[in-house]
Image 1 (cartoon, rainbow, N blue to C red):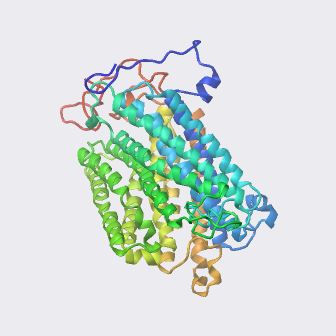
Image 2 (image 1 turned 45 degrees about the horizontal axis):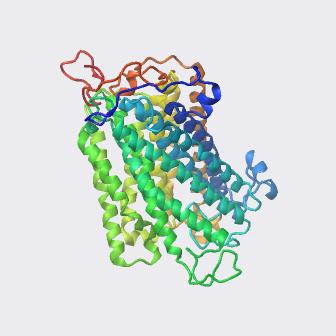
Image 3 (image 1 turned 90 degrees about the vertical axis):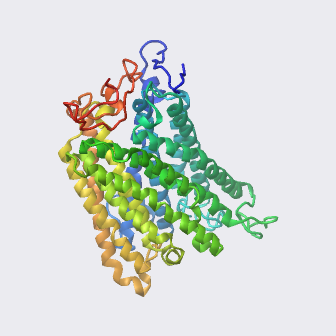
Length: 586
């Protein structure tokens, strides 16, 4: 029952027929923990696929038109192991699509969101368990359609992950990509439906199912970040899904939402009245800029909890940290036009988008300052989760600073089609979101699987990843300053870029080193799942509520109704003999 504090008493859902069968428990699961792990395993598979596509891109830029060894000879068999210009367009389209829509968003919001939210607020499950199950299974049509588009006759979808019309709408604009582009579009529609179902569940669960005493300002930053992320998804995803359906309608039904007068999807007839290609850009970026924060805010929540735990200090400025997340999310909805500075917009409108974009630096600066203040003077415990969390902070600063530079309209017009942009969003999304993701893996692995990951190999994984990611992505700033164009399969045909080939070869070698580091992670992850040291109930001596449950938690999460007495960051309290004071201890 709901009380005045908007909480419910915990209850354990009845198990029909006694013990759940394998299919009911692990396949068509309604337990939030199993659904979170389903998202986790699915995204790890796509992470490997997306990473391989990135290596193929880097190979072409380092050794253009040469045979790619091992998998290249199989994947590009029709071309004798070589990457063609059309196939290169498909590679960067699918790499961006997979990493954003099938890896970063599902693992941060889907896997961690599902697993952690009920545990961290004291609920037994999500508010709508069957809807939660559907949110995962709606990803499978997307998985299937995206795979079909990859292996469709021709070269697959090649309009870029942004899918700008008319290139993405006219069937013969890209040779051999007609059916593939339609399958790609429909696949993203299912991704949008999955995320909308999940966001509805997250918001309802957090608002209505908190344990007694768990006020909003006693929630950990992870839950706050996932709550704001759910709000972003709920308001932004319907726009993208509608835009995708209109694009699919243009391609398959001959409508003219995005095509100017005189064009049609098959060039057979003119479009009556005409459409507006820029309409797609507005709708797409109205979602896709908030999507940047959908991909970074959960990692910010993880990092806040992890830094506080391993510095054994209260999180510095808890309420400002909450308000800064809200500020980042709010500003994220009004800055989409900075992706369109070269589209011919009115200079006054461009100035508005420029100023609002720069304002995001203020709440972002609050977060960075508070993270550093949390570490300052703490009893630092050097563990794998802490290293990845601290690495996130360092890399987020680099990505954020380059974002401020590009927010200036005069600068943006020169760098927008260069590798400076590629450097920026890889520092935000790989060096940022993915390092936050790894911090979460190492931190909550004991709670998920009841065993500890090997910390020594975790530190090796961090050092290799940190060194090689900077070797891969930082030189892209220099390439961008030289005007090196992105999305070109062979920029060296232009004389001014010929001397940049050695730098690209160095970056590609670092990219392969970074891939090797992820093999260490995968071996550590799956090996320790079966052979790792048994985890204690609370191995990190943390304060948040999920550590009250067993490792791994049972069906229903808690054996007794948890009650919350304080905030989540009461570390090193002078009146305590221990250096931590869990939320659930009287």
